Image (tube, rainbow, N blue to C red; front, side, top):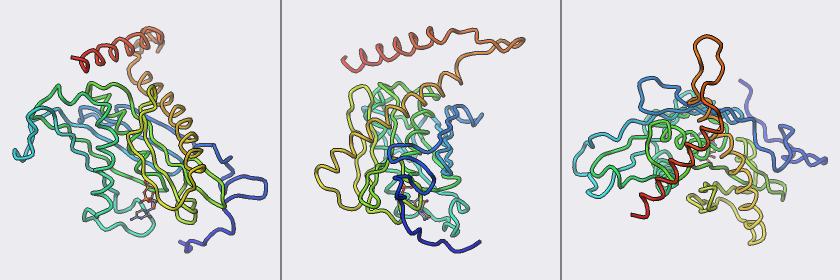
Length: 272
Ligand code: CDP
């Protein structure tokens, strides 16, 4: 393989990025729910060349016992990169970066979950990055949130996440690996879309107050778009097909109503 060469510019004179995207354009995204038959819930995401699978087991008995929380379930997230996920072989031992990203992902997901429903239990979220090409923590949140919904963990909302960065002085959504490496910084973020509550906000590089405000707004817009894709992926997995003609037997509108009813009940539970 030829060694990686630093690109001459990240934004062309026409204002386009190295892969031809506009500054506010996400990479192509493919979300799938129920990709692992053995897990209680699962999902995969392809975001450009980044490819990640998330599997959820639980709620189940927690080992080791000393980690038990008496009033809620413990959300245990394990983010790992496969050894073949990057061009330089990734060392198999868990790195400090992987441990930190696992914690950051758990913190981003927790505010949406009713973990108080399952005291003393654990909900295990295993995330494997199969191919890394930038933005893996955010793509992992997008997939893990869907996997938790697939496992039937009660939640207020799905959580979408995206990184907004800066290159050649311009703000860009959803950085690819080269933009991440050679750009001037990035701000990964996750939100609860209905309330715009921010559940993840990190910053690498320096941004002026005005840039940060604009980056947040671009991120919120992209997260809302991602949220629609997440809901569509859930619908595709749960709207049943008839065996003979493949037509939907459950109407999409009914599914939306059911989803809203479930979320309504969940909010009620939170108020109790
Ligand atoms: O992936 P994310 O942007 O959330 O995290 P990062 O730590 O900013 O890493 C950015 C990118 O660097 C990853 O997505 C990978 O493409 C690459 N990387 C790598 O090539 N080798 C590593 N050991 C870690 C990251």
